[in-house]
Image 1 (cartoon, rainbow, N blue to C red):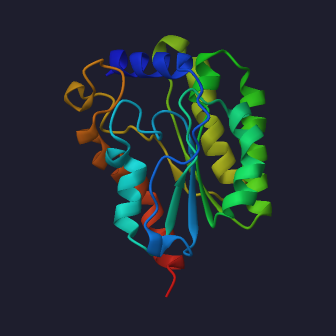
Image 2: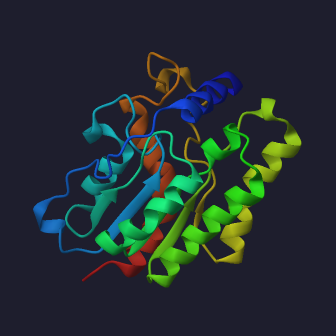
Amino acid sequence: MLRTLYLIFCLLGFLPVTTVVMANETPPAARDSPTLLIWGDSLSAAYGIPVEKGWVNLLQEKLEDKYRVVNGSISGETSAGGLTRLPDAIKTHQPAYLLLELGANDGLRGIDLPTMRSNLEQMVKLAQEAKAQVILIGIKLPPNYGTTFTDKFEAIYAELAKQYALPIVPFLLEGVAEDWDLMQADGLHPTAEAQPQVLENVWKVLKDIILLNSPA
């Protein structure tokens, strides 16, 4: 488990940043429906697998045409990069929901935690000012970064969730990162077969919000 986590996050830290914003095809019937904007890194960008197999695309299939899912995730993205891009994305897509999955690359690159926290917090505020419901998606760092650092890193997600009353997915790769059979041949990213479990980790938190606010 620990080796897998280490490999995943090392690659996350050094993947080149692309400029692709849309990664999934929205069904025509969903284009006028409330929008879910997924704002993450390679774990949400379907790195190394067909885009249609990624958990974000599977989410669109599950929601059918009741919601429009926009994937603004970029491999290698940091909280600073996400913050820079977010205002335009909010203006363009006017999301009803923002699923925020960033921060891992900050930890791996040694960006100080207060800066990471500030960037995440500013993104939460931007979304809330735009009347979007934020769902925070947590990430865990490998233990070789030291207990003190990893505990403080993980606590940022819980603290922000509490401060801003946000639903939170504790760990996106729960039940996946520790299983080599659910990893790609490079041993670095979840396989297409793992994506339903990744989606389930998100859906456990998202489903009640969706059902509560589901359009008639």
